[in-house]
Length: 266
Image 1 (cartoon, one colour):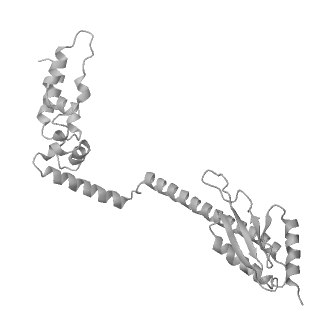
Image 2: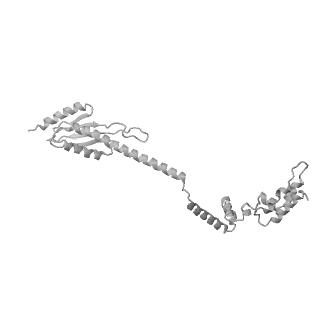
Image 3: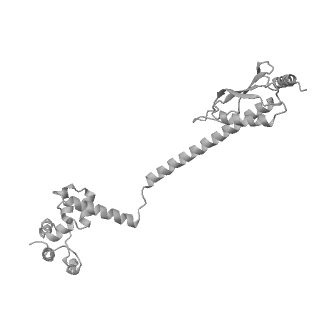
């Protein structure tokens, strides 16, 4: 006949020698109840600053009257930092069931530490993967924000059409020309929606002023002094053949050239 009480006492003595600082008897029994402190390896779980977070718990085992022929009662107490306690308990019960018929106190304590470390490592890996994915997503979003929308010929033409339509709608309003921004004014002139002279605020270009007003040539010639460089009118021969689009001011152009040929002064 098996002496369960003796087998249990022998195991308690062995556990005390293996875990001199972690092992303690809570109830001598029989059947006895005892606890073993378990602390997984450090540095598995860290906070955002890389500081290790402590993880520890107490494995409590309550013998049955017929232990080790039956599975003892197993509990986890004083759990610190192990969120996956249910997972640990499920695996420990499996170890106990596989160990029926032999002393299992040491196997349960060693398995509790090993299983906890594996669970914590898997958690750390999940957190690391999630953080890596989060950083990658933020970087991708930042790059997309700076890159903007890729412009194609089709998208540009669509934007151009919309932009011109917007300008045309503004010009239909009373005083619409004054409502245009400088960019819209320039675009309106290019698109033929606004007179180029009006687009420049009513000011002629220097070339337009010279070709339209012969008095400009007179005013400059009147101030010429001895030693000043005169203009050789012959240099302008053939200008009438150039394809210069200056509205209907050919008469003004001819008067300026004629004046230069006469010496620049009436």
